[in-house]
Amino acid sequence: MTVLRQRNRPAMQAAIIIFPGSNREHDVCLAWKLATGREPLCVWHGDASLPEADLIILPGGFAHGDYLRCGAIAAHSPIMREVRARAARGTPVLGICNGFQILTEAGMLPGALLPNRSLAFTCKDIYLRVENSQTIFTCGYAAGQTISVPVAHHDGGYTADPATLDRLEDQGLVAFRYCGPSGALSEDNNFNGSARAIAGIFNDSRTILGLMPHPEDATDPLLGGTDGRAFFDGLVSALQ
Image 1 (cartoon, rainbow, N blue to C red):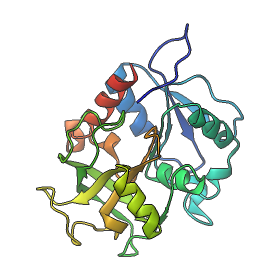
Image 2: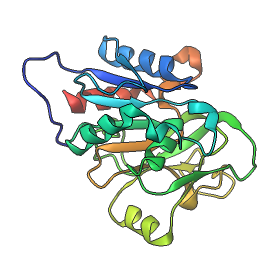
Image 3: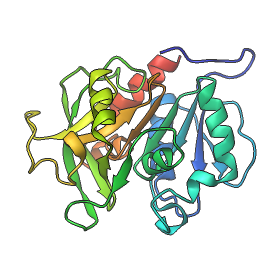
Image 4: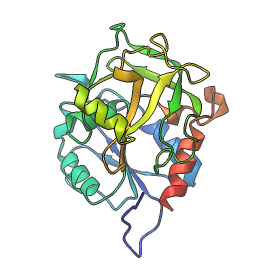
């Protein structure tokens, strides 16, 4: 949970990468401001440089219209070279929904996201079970805790080869699984058909998280729930 930080600059700054077709950047901005009291920075995908930041966020949406494959074009945007470089130096990176797809296409997380088993876009509240709470991203929760947040995707079925899935399990790199209200796993609750009901994963150092559900859209009672507040509050606390 070590985060590299330069001296003599304001603490707690996030940089949100905007792609053509992003549509959840405002949601993430509001969630971040709610947790920190600060407006995050917004960075255009065509830029070649990133401002100093404690966290990089790739938001949800349909980057480049999801042509070729979801996230395939965005993974080659100029800014992604700097995102990779910052990640290699330890800056945490969070990819939500389309951001998760981009991280897999960029090779920053293993596996891929396939169309939902229904072959239809799904937008609804679902339940997640927290699998590992010992990370900067999930320290606001308890291991085994069940939370409710929305999903909104067409291509959210996580897949990887059996050896990779075993490694993710064995090394505690599964962040969240789709589950029922009590935390129980079942095929019915695994609505998009993800391998082993996986909803989010970490990289080996647990400084990169990709997840398909939207915790940023569960931070205000007016949106129907607040289970996402602990995600951002815990993250901010860990980065301070």
